[in-house]
Image (tube, rainbow, N blue to C red):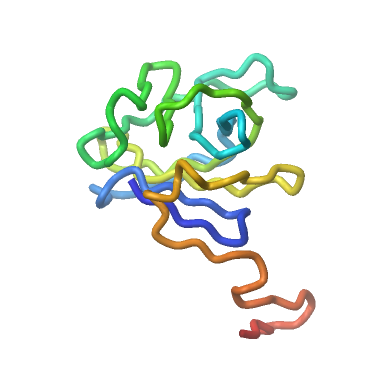
Length: 157
């Protein structure tokens, strides 16, 4: 499992080494970001139904996580028909934050290829202690190309 982070707001979790077949994206999936007591981002929980969410979400046919493709110990993965939880460390969850994510799903066997999280403006990623071993790219805010709205092709480095 690998993670890329841009501007502490765009996160992608690679859940499979390589896609098999066509990739489809399931958008706007309700999830919860998991944190420990010190505010370290600990993991993500995706479920068929979060009854405590403000809006009602349609039940979801959760994709399958191929555990042979990830380096997270199997006891940190919870995979059932109604829930998928990935934790990056064996640590208790102290806080859960509502969020949405997009799921990239591939092949006829409905395998999870990746999870895209675009943090809402009021949500902060938190500290990265538990995810550091999995991060392959982390571009802090202000170090990437900037875009000026209203001007075509106005990317500047």
